Length: 538
Image (cartoon, rainbow, N blue to C red; front, side):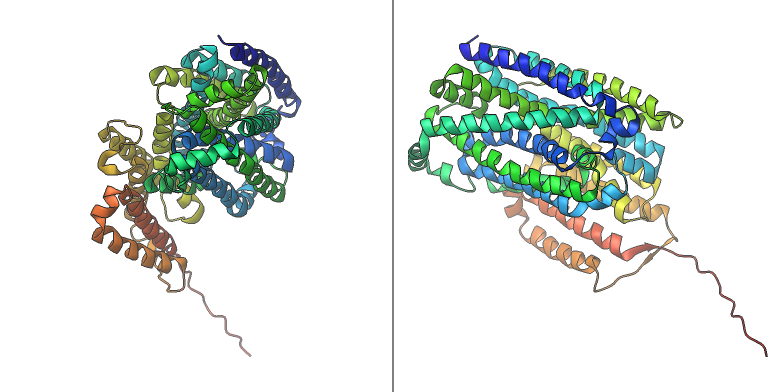
Protein backbone atom coordinates (compact mmCIF):
# COMPACT_ATOMS: atom_id res chain seq x y z
CA UNK A 1 0.00 0.00 0.00
CA UNK A 2 1.23 3.48 -0.90
CA UNK A 3 1.45 6.46 1.44
CA UNK A 4 -1.67 7.84 -0.21
CA UNK A 5 -3.41 4.56 0.62
CA UNK A 6 -2.66 4.92 4.32
CA UNK A 7 -3.96 8.48 4.33
CA UNK A 8 -7.14 7.44 2.53
CA UNK A 9 -7.77 4.51 4.91
CA UNK A 10 -7.34 6.85 7.86
CA UNK A 11 -9.75 9.41 6.43
CA UNK A 12 -12.21 6.67 5.44
CA UNK A 13 -12.27 5.10 8.90
CA UNK A 14 -12.88 8.46 10.57
CA UNK A 15 -15.56 9.32 8.01
CA UNK A 16 -17.25 5.93 8.47
CA UNK A 17 -17.73 6.52 12.19
CA UNK A 18 -18.93 10.03 11.45
CA UNK A 19 -21.56 8.77 8.96
CA UNK A 20 -22.81 6.18 11.44
CA UNK A 21 -23.11 8.92 14.05
CA UNK A 22 -24.96 11.20 11.62
CA UNK A 23 -27.33 8.41 10.59
CA UNK A 24 -28.36 7.88 14.21
CA UNK A 25 -29.63 11.47 14.37
CA UNK A 26 -32.58 10.27 12.32
CA UNK A 27 -33.53 7.35 14.58
CA UNK A 28 -35.90 9.35 16.76
CA UNK A 29 -37.64 10.76 13.68
CA UNK A 30 -38.18 7.38 12.02
CA UNK A 31 -40.35 5.62 14.57
CA UNK A 32 -43.28 4.98 12.22
CA UNK A 33 -43.57 4.03 8.57
CA UNK A 34 -44.10 7.60 7.39
CA UNK A 35 -40.92 8.73 9.15
CA UNK A 36 -38.88 5.76 7.99
CA UNK A 37 -39.90 5.71 4.32
CA UNK A 38 -40.37 9.41 3.49
CA UNK A 39 -38.90 11.30 6.45
CA UNK A 40 -42.36 12.09 7.83
CA UNK A 41 -42.70 14.47 4.85
CA UNK A 42 -40.56 16.78 6.96
CA UNK A 43 -37.57 17.59 4.69
CA UNK A 44 -36.90 21.27 4.13
CA UNK A 45 -35.32 22.80 1.03
CA UNK A 46 -31.77 22.17 2.30
CA UNK A 47 -32.36 18.45 2.83
CA UNK A 48 -33.95 18.00 -0.60
CA UNK A 49 -31.06 19.93 -2.16
CA UNK A 50 -28.31 17.82 -0.61
CA UNK A 51 -30.19 14.55 -1.19
CA UNK A 52 -30.62 15.21 -4.92
CA UNK A 53 -27.12 16.69 -5.29
CA UNK A 54 -25.67 13.61 -3.66
CA UNK A 55 -27.73 11.22 -5.78
CA UNK A 56 -27.16 12.65 -9.25
CA UNK A 57 -24.05 14.80 -8.97
CA UNK A 58 -22.11 12.08 -7.17
CA UNK A 59 -22.72 9.41 -9.80
CA UNK A 60 -22.39 11.89 -12.66
CA UNK A 61 -19.08 13.17 -11.28
CA UNK A 62 -17.58 9.68 -11.42
CA UNK A 63 -19.02 8.98 -14.88
CA UNK A 64 -17.91 12.32 -16.36
CA UNK A 65 -14.41 11.99 -14.90
CA UNK A 66 -14.02 8.69 -16.74
CA UNK A 67 -15.62 9.97 -19.95
CA UNK A 68 -13.64 13.22 -20.11
CA UNK A 69 -10.35 11.32 -19.82
CA UNK A 70 -11.37 9.35 -22.90
CA UNK A 71 -13.35 11.88 -24.96
CA UNK A 72 -12.59 15.39 -23.65
CA UNK A 73 -15.13 18.21 -23.40
CA UNK A 74 -17.93 16.18 -25.03
CA UNK A 75 -18.36 14.39 -21.69
CA UNK A 76 -20.11 17.53 -20.46
CA UNK A 77 -23.25 16.48 -22.36
CA UNK A 78 -23.74 13.70 -19.82
CA UNK A 79 -23.97 16.37 -17.12
CA UNK A 80 -26.26 18.54 -19.24
CA UNK A 81 -28.63 15.60 -19.73
CA UNK A 82 -28.61 14.84 -15.99
CA UNK A 83 -29.29 18.52 -15.13
CA UNK A 84 -32.19 18.68 -17.58
CA UNK A 85 -33.57 15.51 -16.00
CA UNK A 86 -33.57 17.11 -12.52
CA UNK A 87 -35.15 20.34 -13.76
CA UNK A 88 -38.02 18.52 -15.49
CA UNK A 89 -38.79 16.64 -12.27
CA UNK A 90 -38.73 19.96 -10.40
CA UNK A 91 -40.92 21.92 -12.79
CA UNK A 92 -43.37 19.24 -13.93
CA UNK A 93 -43.66 16.27 -11.57
CA UNK A 94 -42.87 17.26 -8.01
CA UNK A 95 -46.18 19.04 -7.28
CA UNK A 96 -48.61 16.40 -8.64
CA UNK A 97 -46.63 13.51 -7.14
CA UNK A 98 -46.45 15.28 -3.75
CA UNK A 99 -50.22 15.70 -3.79
CA UNK A 100 -50.55 11.96 -4.42
CA UNK A 101 -48.28 11.33 -1.39
CA UNK A 102 -46.19 9.06 -3.62
CA UNK A 103 -43.66 6.83 -1.88
CA UNK A 104 -42.47 4.49 -4.66
CA UNK A 105 -43.24 3.96 -8.34
CA UNK A 106 -44.06 0.31 -7.65
CA UNK A 107 -46.44 1.49 -4.94
CA UNK A 108 -48.14 3.81 -7.43
CA UNK A 109 -48.62 0.88 -9.81
CA UNK A 110 -49.97 -1.31 -7.02
CA UNK A 111 -52.51 1.32 -5.95
CA UNK A 112 -53.76 1.55 -9.53
CA UNK A 113 -53.50 -2.02 -10.82
CA UNK A 114 -53.64 -4.25 -7.75
CA UNK A 115 -51.42 -6.45 -5.63
CA UNK A 116 -50.02 -8.69 -8.38
CA UNK A 117 -48.68 -5.67 -10.24
CA UNK A 118 -47.45 -4.15 -6.96
CA UNK A 119 -45.51 -7.30 -6.15
CA UNK A 120 -43.98 -7.83 -9.59
CA UNK A 121 -43.13 -4.15 -10.15
CA UNK A 122 -41.66 -3.96 -6.64
CA UNK A 123 -39.48 -7.02 -7.22
CA UNK A 124 -38.21 -5.80 -10.60
CA UNK A 125 -37.45 -2.35 -9.18
CA UNK A 126 -35.81 -3.74 -6.05
CA UNK A 127 -33.42 -6.12 -7.80
CA UNK A 128 -32.21 -3.50 -10.30
CA UNK A 129 -31.16 -0.93 -7.70
CA UNK A 130 -28.17 -2.98 -6.43
CA UNK A 131 -26.99 -3.09 -10.06
CA UNK A 132 -26.80 0.70 -10.15
CA UNK A 133 -25.16 0.75 -6.73
CA UNK A 134 -22.52 -1.78 -7.67
CA UNK A 135 -21.74 -0.02 -10.96
CA UNK A 136 -20.75 3.20 -9.18
CA UNK A 137 -19.03 1.34 -6.34
CA UNK A 138 -16.91 -0.62 -8.83
CA UNK A 139 -15.96 2.58 -10.63
CA UNK A 140 -14.74 4.05 -7.34
CA UNK A 141 -13.00 0.77 -6.46
CA UNK A 142 -10.97 0.78 -9.65
CA UNK A 143 -9.45 4.11 -8.59
CA UNK A 144 -9.00 2.99 -4.99
CA UNK A 145 -7.07 -0.12 -6.01
CA UNK A 146 -4.35 2.04 -7.61
CA UNK A 147 -2.98 3.27 -4.29
CA UNK A 148 -4.29 0.76 -1.73
CA UNK A 149 -4.13 -2.58 -3.53
CA UNK A 150 -7.60 -3.43 -2.14
CA UNK A 151 -9.44 -5.68 -4.59
CA UNK A 152 -12.51 -4.42 -6.42
CA UNK A 153 -14.80 -6.94 -4.77
CA UNK A 154 -13.53 -6.22 -1.25
CA UNK A 155 -13.95 -2.49 -1.83
CA UNK A 156 -17.56 -3.02 -2.97
CA UNK A 157 -18.24 -5.29 0.00
CA UNK A 158 -17.00 -2.66 2.47
CA UNK A 159 -19.07 0.04 0.75
CA UNK A 160 -22.19 -2.16 0.74
CA UNK A 161 -21.81 -3.08 4.42
CA UNK A 162 -21.43 0.56 5.45
CA UNK A 163 -24.59 1.45 3.51
CA UNK A 164 -26.43 -1.40 5.23
CA UNK A 165 -25.31 -0.31 8.70
CA UNK A 166 -26.29 3.33 8.54
CA UNK A 167 -29.52 2.87 6.55
CA UNK A 168 -30.79 0.53 9.28
CA UNK A 169 -30.96 3.31 11.84
CA UNK A 170 -33.23 6.01 10.50
CA UNK A 171 -34.32 5.11 6.98
CA UNK A 172 -34.92 8.24 4.93
CA UNK A 173 -33.71 10.48 7.76
CA UNK A 174 -30.41 8.57 7.72
CA UNK A 175 -30.20 9.22 3.99
CA UNK A 176 -30.82 12.93 4.53
CA UNK A 177 -28.22 13.45 7.27
CA UNK A 178 -25.52 11.40 5.53
CA UNK A 179 -26.18 13.08 2.16
CA UNK A 180 -25.57 16.43 3.82
CA UNK A 181 -22.17 15.15 4.97
CA UNK A 182 -21.37 13.67 1.56
CA UNK A 183 -22.10 16.90 -0.30
CA UNK A 184 -19.76 18.85 2.01
CA UNK A 185 -17.01 16.32 1.21
CA UNK A 186 -17.83 16.68 -2.53
CA UNK A 187 -16.91 20.33 -2.46
CA UNK A 188 -13.75 19.70 -0.46
CA UNK A 189 -12.82 17.24 -3.23
CA UNK A 190 -13.70 19.84 -5.87
CA UNK A 191 -11.47 22.45 -4.19
CA UNK A 192 -8.52 20.02 -4.02
CA UNK A 193 -9.01 18.99 -7.64
CA UNK A 194 -9.11 22.62 -8.76
CA UNK A 195 -5.88 23.31 -6.87
CA UNK A 196 -4.25 20.31 -8.56
CA UNK A 197 -5.48 21.42 -11.97
CA UNK A 198 -3.86 24.85 -11.73
CA UNK A 199 -0.59 23.33 -10.47
CA UNK A 200 -0.42 20.74 -13.23
CA UNK A 201 -1.19 21.08 -16.13
CA UNK A 202 -3.08 24.39 -15.84
CA UNK A 203 -4.90 26.16 -18.64
CA UNK A 204 -1.78 26.10 -20.82
CA UNK A 205 -1.62 22.33 -20.46
CA UNK A 206 -5.21 21.93 -21.62
CA UNK A 207 -4.52 24.18 -24.62
CA UNK A 208 -1.55 21.97 -25.44
CA UNK A 209 -3.80 18.89 -25.16
CA UNK A 210 -6.26 20.46 -27.62
CA UNK A 211 -3.45 21.18 -30.07
CA UNK A 212 -1.93 17.71 -29.84
CA UNK A 213 -5.28 15.88 -29.74
CA UNK A 214 -7.96 18.10 -31.34
CA UNK A 215 -10.69 15.52 -30.69
CA UNK A 216 -10.54 16.47 -26.99
CA UNK A 217 -11.82 19.94 -27.92
CA UNK A 218 -14.67 18.52 -30.00
CA UNK A 219 -18.19 18.77 -28.58
CA UNK A 220 -19.25 15.49 -30.21
CA UNK A 221 -16.14 13.33 -29.73
CA UNK A 222 -18.14 10.90 -27.58
CA UNK A 223 -20.25 10.15 -30.67
CA UNK A 224 -23.71 11.32 -31.67
CA UNK A 225 -25.29 7.96 -30.83
CA UNK A 226 -23.81 7.98 -27.32
CA UNK A 227 -24.76 11.60 -26.61
CA UNK A 228 -28.34 11.06 -27.80
CA UNK A 229 -28.50 7.89 -25.70
CA UNK A 230 -27.54 9.94 -22.62
CA UNK A 231 -30.33 12.43 -23.28
CA UNK A 232 -32.80 9.72 -24.22
CA UNK A 233 -32.05 7.67 -21.12
CA UNK A 234 -32.36 10.61 -18.74
CA UNK A 235 -35.49 12.02 -20.39
CA UNK A 236 -37.34 8.70 -20.49
CA UNK A 237 -36.24 8.06 -16.92
CA UNK A 238 -37.84 11.29 -15.67
CA UNK A 239 -41.08 9.56 -14.77
CA UNK A 240 -39.35 6.48 -13.31
CA UNK A 241 -36.73 8.12 -11.06
CA UNK A 242 -37.98 6.40 -7.92
CA UNK A 243 -34.99 7.12 -5.66
CA UNK A 244 -35.12 10.81 -6.59
CA UNK A 245 -38.88 10.94 -6.02
CA UNK A 246 -38.66 9.22 -2.66
CA UNK A 247 -36.15 11.80 -1.42
CA UNK A 248 -37.65 14.90 -3.05
CA UNK A 249 -41.20 13.96 -2.02
CA UNK A 250 -40.09 13.76 1.60
CA UNK A 251 -40.41 17.55 1.50
CA UNK A 252 -42.80 19.50 3.72
CA UNK A 253 -44.39 21.26 0.75
CA UNK A 254 -44.19 20.93 -3.05
CA UNK A 255 -42.63 24.40 -3.20
CA UNK A 256 -39.74 23.34 -0.93
CA UNK A 257 -39.26 20.19 -2.96
CA UNK A 258 -39.17 22.16 -6.21
CA UNK A 259 -36.68 24.68 -4.84
CA UNK A 260 -34.49 21.86 -3.53
CA UNK A 261 -34.36 20.21 -6.95
CA UNK A 262 -33.55 23.49 -8.70
CA UNK A 263 -30.80 24.31 -6.20
CA UNK A 264 -29.41 20.78 -6.64
CA UNK A 265 -29.18 21.30 -10.40
CA UNK A 266 -27.24 24.52 -9.77
CA UNK A 267 -24.89 22.86 -7.25
CA UNK A 268 -24.21 20.16 -9.79
CA UNK A 269 -22.80 22.60 -12.36
CA UNK A 270 -19.37 23.18 -10.73
CA UNK A 271 -19.05 19.44 -10.08
CA UNK A 272 -19.75 18.70 -13.76
CA UNK A 273 -17.23 21.31 -14.95
CA UNK A 274 -14.66 20.13 -12.42
CA UNK A 275 -15.01 16.49 -13.51
CA UNK A 276 -14.45 17.46 -17.15
CA UNK A 277 -11.36 19.52 -16.31
CA UNK A 278 -9.84 16.89 -14.00
CA UNK A 279 -10.37 14.12 -16.54
CA UNK A 280 -8.68 16.14 -19.29
CA UNK A 281 -5.87 17.13 -16.91
CA UNK A 282 -5.21 13.45 -16.28
CA UNK A 283 -5.26 12.82 -20.05
CA UNK A 284 -2.53 15.43 -20.49
CA UNK A 285 -0.35 14.37 -17.56
CA UNK A 286 -0.90 10.58 -17.65
CA UNK A 287 -1.81 9.66 -21.24
CA UNK A 288 -2.21 6.14 -22.55
CA UNK A 289 -4.31 4.55 -19.81
CA UNK A 290 -7.37 2.61 -20.89
CA UNK A 291 -9.44 3.82 -17.93
CA UNK A 292 -9.76 7.36 -16.70
CA UNK A 293 -10.53 6.19 -13.17
CA UNK A 294 -7.09 4.61 -13.05
CA UNK A 295 -5.36 7.59 -14.66
CA UNK A 296 -6.82 10.20 -12.29
CA UNK A 297 -5.24 8.73 -9.12
CA UNK A 298 -1.90 8.48 -10.93
CA UNK A 299 -2.22 12.11 -12.02
CA UNK A 300 -3.02 13.33 -8.51
CA UNK A 301 -0.24 11.26 -6.90
CA UNK A 302 2.17 12.94 -9.30
CA UNK A 303 0.81 16.43 -8.53
CA UNK A 304 -0.22 16.68 -4.87
CA UNK A 305 1.11 15.61 -1.45
CA UNK A 306 -0.32 12.33 -0.12
CA UNK A 307 -2.74 13.82 2.47
CA UNK A 308 -4.51 15.92 -0.17
CA UNK A 309 -4.76 12.97 -2.56
CA UNK A 310 -6.24 10.85 0.21
CA UNK A 311 -8.76 13.59 1.03
CA UNK A 312 -9.67 13.95 -2.66
CA UNK A 313 -10.51 10.26 -2.87
CA UNK A 314 -12.51 10.47 0.31
CA UNK A 315 -14.77 12.71 -1.80
CA UNK A 316 -14.72 10.05 -4.49
CA UNK A 317 -15.93 7.50 -1.94
CA UNK A 318 -18.58 9.94 -0.71
CA UNK A 319 -19.81 10.12 -4.32
CA UNK A 320 -20.17 6.34 -4.44
CA UNK A 321 -21.96 6.31 -1.08
CA UNK A 322 -24.26 9.20 -1.99
CA UNK A 323 -25.48 7.29 -5.04
CA UNK A 324 -25.57 3.88 -3.38
CA UNK A 325 -27.49 4.88 -0.24
CA UNK A 326 -30.64 6.19 -2.00
CA UNK A 327 -30.51 3.31 -4.49
CA UNK A 328 -30.23 0.63 -1.82
CA UNK A 329 -32.85 2.27 0.39
CA UNK A 330 -35.32 2.83 -2.43
CA UNK A 331 -34.84 -0.71 -3.69
CA UNK A 332 -35.37 -2.07 -0.18
CA UNK A 333 -38.52 0.06 0.14
CA UNK A 334 -39.93 -1.49 -3.04
CA UNK A 335 -39.04 -4.98 -1.85
CA UNK A 336 -40.00 -4.62 1.82
CA UNK A 337 -42.92 -2.22 1.61
CA UNK A 338 -44.46 -3.01 -1.78
CA UNK A 339 -43.67 -6.69 -2.26
CA UNK A 340 -44.28 -7.18 1.47
CA UNK A 341 -47.67 -5.49 1.20
CA UNK A 342 -48.54 -7.58 -1.87
CA UNK A 343 -47.71 -10.82 -0.05
CA UNK A 344 -49.23 -9.74 3.26
CA UNK A 345 -51.98 -7.14 2.62
CA UNK A 346 -52.75 -6.99 6.36
CA UNK A 347 -49.19 -5.98 7.33
CA UNK A 348 -48.98 -2.86 9.49
CA UNK A 349 -46.39 -0.08 9.17
CA UNK A 350 -44.03 -1.55 11.75
CA UNK A 351 -44.08 -4.90 9.94
CA UNK A 352 -43.33 -3.15 6.63
CA UNK A 353 -40.35 -1.40 8.25
CA UNK A 354 -39.14 -4.78 9.46
CA UNK A 355 -39.54 -6.26 5.96
CA UNK A 356 -37.60 -3.31 4.53
CA UNK A 357 -34.70 -3.75 6.94
CA UNK A 358 -34.47 -7.43 6.00
CA UNK A 359 -34.65 -6.37 2.35
CA UNK A 360 -31.68 -4.06 2.92
CA UNK A 361 -29.68 -7.06 4.07
CA UNK A 362 -30.73 -9.04 1.00
CA UNK A 363 -29.85 -6.20 -1.39
CA UNK A 364 -26.50 -5.74 0.38
CA UNK A 365 -25.74 -9.39 -0.35
CA UNK A 366 -26.88 -8.96 -3.96
CA UNK A 367 -24.62 -5.94 -4.41
CA UNK A 368 -21.62 -8.03 -3.33
CA UNK A 369 -22.69 -10.99 -5.50
CA UNK A 370 -23.02 -8.71 -8.54
CA UNK A 371 -19.47 -7.47 -7.93
CA UNK A 372 -18.26 -11.08 -7.85
CA UNK A 373 -20.10 -11.95 -11.05
CA UNK A 374 -18.75 -9.10 -13.17
CA UNK A 375 -16.31 -6.62 -11.71
CA UNK A 376 -14.24 -5.72 -14.76
CA UNK A 377 -16.90 -3.57 -16.48
CA UNK A 378 -18.83 -1.46 -14.01
CA UNK A 379 -20.91 0.30 -16.65
CA UNK A 380 -22.30 -3.08 -17.78
CA UNK A 381 -24.47 -3.23 -14.67
CA UNK A 382 -25.98 0.15 -15.53
CA UNK A 383 -27.10 -1.20 -18.90
CA UNK A 384 -28.69 -4.31 -17.36
CA UNK A 385 -30.50 -2.21 -14.76
CA UNK A 386 -31.86 0.32 -17.27
CA UNK A 387 -33.07 -2.44 -19.58
CA UNK A 388 -34.68 -4.54 -16.84
CA UNK A 389 -36.57 -1.80 -14.98
CA UNK A 390 -37.35 0.84 -17.61
CA UNK A 391 -38.53 -1.75 -20.12
CA UNK A 392 -40.97 -3.10 -17.53
CA UNK A 393 -42.41 -0.06 -15.81
CA UNK A 394 -42.40 2.84 -18.29
CA UNK A 395 -45.78 2.29 -19.97
CA UNK A 396 -47.65 1.18 -16.82
CA UNK A 397 -46.49 4.29 -14.92
CA UNK A 398 -47.48 6.66 -17.74
CA UNK A 399 -50.85 4.91 -18.09
CA UNK A 400 -51.47 4.93 -14.32
CA UNK A 401 -51.21 8.71 -14.36
CA UNK A 402 -52.82 9.61 -17.69
CA UNK A 403 -54.94 6.77 -19.13
CA UNK A 404 -57.71 5.01 -17.15
CA UNK A 405 -58.51 2.70 -20.08
CA UNK A 406 -55.60 0.39 -19.15
CA UNK A 407 -56.58 -2.84 -17.39
CA UNK A 408 -54.88 -4.69 -14.57
CA UNK A 409 -54.14 -7.64 -16.86
CA UNK A 410 -52.56 -5.37 -19.47
CA UNK A 411 -50.30 -3.75 -16.88
CA UNK A 412 -49.21 -7.14 -15.52
CA UNK A 413 -48.49 -8.62 -18.96
CA UNK A 414 -46.60 -5.50 -20.08
CA UNK A 415 -44.25 -5.80 -17.10
CA UNK A 416 -43.27 -9.27 -18.36
CA UNK A 417 -43.10 -8.54 -22.09
CA UNK A 418 -41.20 -5.27 -21.77
CA UNK A 419 -38.49 -6.56 -19.48
CA UNK A 420 -38.21 -9.94 -21.25
CA UNK A 421 -37.93 -8.41 -24.74
CA UNK A 422 -35.27 -5.94 -23.63
CA UNK A 423 -33.20 -8.65 -21.96
CA UNK A 424 -33.66 -10.96 -24.97
CA UNK A 425 -32.32 -8.22 -27.24
CA UNK A 426 -29.39 -7.78 -24.88
CA UNK A 427 -28.80 -11.55 -25.04
CA UNK A 428 -28.69 -11.31 -28.84
CA UNK A 429 -26.08 -8.58 -28.33
CA UNK A 430 -23.89 -11.07 -26.45
CA UNK A 431 -24.30 -8.99 -23.26
CA UNK A 432 -21.74 -6.51 -24.61
CA UNK A 433 -21.28 -3.17 -22.89
CA UNK A 434 -21.87 -1.02 -25.99
CA UNK A 435 -21.88 -3.27 -29.08
CA UNK A 436 -25.60 -4.01 -29.40
CA UNK A 437 -27.49 -6.29 -31.77
CA UNK A 438 -28.37 -4.36 -34.95
CA UNK A 439 -26.62 -1.37 -33.40
CA UNK A 440 -29.72 -0.76 -31.23
CA UNK A 441 -29.78 -0.29 -27.47
CA UNK A 442 -31.99 -2.98 -25.89
CA UNK A 443 -33.85 -0.46 -23.70
CA UNK A 444 -35.45 1.08 -26.81
CA UNK A 445 -36.74 -2.35 -27.83
CA UNK A 446 -37.99 -3.23 -24.37
CA UNK A 447 -39.81 0.05 -23.83
CA UNK A 448 -41.38 -0.14 -27.28
CA UNK A 449 -42.74 -3.64 -26.65
CA UNK A 450 -43.87 -2.49 -23.20
CA UNK A 451 -46.02 0.26 -24.75
CA UNK A 452 -47.39 -1.88 -27.60
CA UNK A 453 -48.38 -4.63 -25.15
CA UNK A 454 -50.20 -2.39 -22.68
CA UNK A 455 -52.18 -0.65 -25.44
CA UNK A 456 -53.10 -3.83 -27.32
CA UNK A 457 -54.14 -5.89 -24.30
CA UNK A 458 -56.11 -3.00 -22.78
CA UNK A 459 -58.11 -2.44 -25.98
CA UNK A 460 -58.86 -6.15 -26.24
CA UNK A 461 -59.85 -6.42 -22.58
CA UNK A 462 -62.04 -3.33 -22.82
CA UNK A 463 -63.65 -4.18 -26.17
CA UNK A 464 -67.00 -2.40 -26.30
CA UNK A 465 -66.15 -0.18 -23.34
CA UNK A 466 -64.08 2.47 -25.09
CA UNK A 467 -64.75 5.08 -27.76
CA UNK A 468 -62.57 7.00 -30.21
CA UNK A 469 -62.80 10.76 -29.67
CA UNK A 470 -60.38 12.53 -31.98
CA UNK A 471 -59.71 16.25 -31.89
CA UNK A 472 -57.54 18.33 -34.18
CA UNK A 473 -56.77 20.70 -31.32
CA UNK A 474 -55.46 18.12 -28.86
CA UNK A 475 -51.94 16.93 -28.07
CA UNK A 476 -52.97 13.59 -29.56
CA UNK A 477 -53.30 15.09 -33.03
CA UNK A 478 -49.89 16.76 -32.93
CA UNK A 479 -48.26 13.60 -31.58
CA UNK A 480 -49.87 11.63 -34.42
CA UNK A 481 -48.48 14.07 -36.98
CA UNK A 482 -45.04 13.83 -35.36
CA UNK A 483 -45.23 10.02 -35.33
CA UNK A 484 -46.17 9.90 -39.03
CA UNK A 485 -43.36 12.30 -39.89
CA UNK A 486 -40.82 10.25 -37.93
CA UNK A 487 -42.13 7.05 -39.56
CA UNK A 488 -41.46 8.53 -43.00
CA UNK A 489 -37.92 9.42 -41.92
CA UNK A 490 -37.49 6.01 -40.29
CA UNK A 491 -38.40 3.94 -43.35
CA UNK A 492 -36.80 6.24 -45.94
CA UNK A 493 -33.50 6.53 -44.05
CA UNK A 494 -33.42 3.23 -42.20
CA UNK A 495 -29.91 2.21 -43.27
CA UNK A 496 -28.53 5.63 -42.34
CA UNK A 497 -30.20 5.56 -38.92
CA UNK A 498 -29.17 1.95 -38.28
CA UNK A 499 -25.53 2.63 -39.12
CA UNK A 500 -25.44 5.47 -36.59
CA UNK A 501 -27.29 3.62 -33.87
CA UNK A 502 -30.34 5.88 -34.06
CA UNK A 503 -32.92 3.49 -35.51
CA UNK A 504 -34.02 2.13 -32.12
CA UNK A 505 -34.47 5.56 -30.57
CA UNK A 506 -36.43 6.91 -33.54
CA UNK A 507 -38.57 3.77 -33.55
CA UNK A 508 -39.35 4.27 -29.86
CA UNK A 509 -40.24 7.93 -30.46
CA UNK A 510 -42.75 6.80 -33.11
CA UNK A 511 -44.31 4.32 -30.68
CA UNK A 512 -44.43 7.01 -27.96
CA UNK A 513 -46.13 9.42 -30.34
CA UNK A 514 -48.82 6.84 -31.13
CA UNK A 515 -49.12 6.07 -27.41
CA UNK A 516 -49.87 9.74 -26.68
CA UNK A 517 -52.43 9.73 -29.49
CA UNK A 518 -54.16 6.68 -28.01
CA UNK A 519 -54.23 8.25 -24.55
CA UNK A 520 -55.81 11.41 -25.98
CA UNK A 521 -58.25 9.86 -28.48
CA UNK A 522 -59.37 6.64 -26.76
CA UNK A 523 -61.69 7.27 -23.84
CA UNK A 524 -63.77 5.16 -21.50
CA UNK A 525 -67.36 4.82 -22.66
CA UNK A 526 -69.66 6.60 -20.26
CA UNK A 527 -73.04 5.01 -19.62
CA UNK A 528 -75.77 7.54 -20.15
CA UNK A 529 -78.68 7.64 -17.77
CA UNK A 530 -82.04 8.62 -19.36
CA UNK A 531 -83.36 11.90 -18.05
CA UNK A 532 -87.10 12.21 -17.54
CA UNK A 533 -88.39 15.71 -17.99
CA UNK A 534 -90.64 16.98 -15.27
CA UNK A 535 -93.41 19.16 -16.66
CA UNK A 536 -95.07 21.72 -14.54
CA UNK A 537 -98.84 21.54 -14.51
CA UNK A 538 -100.99 24.44 -13.81
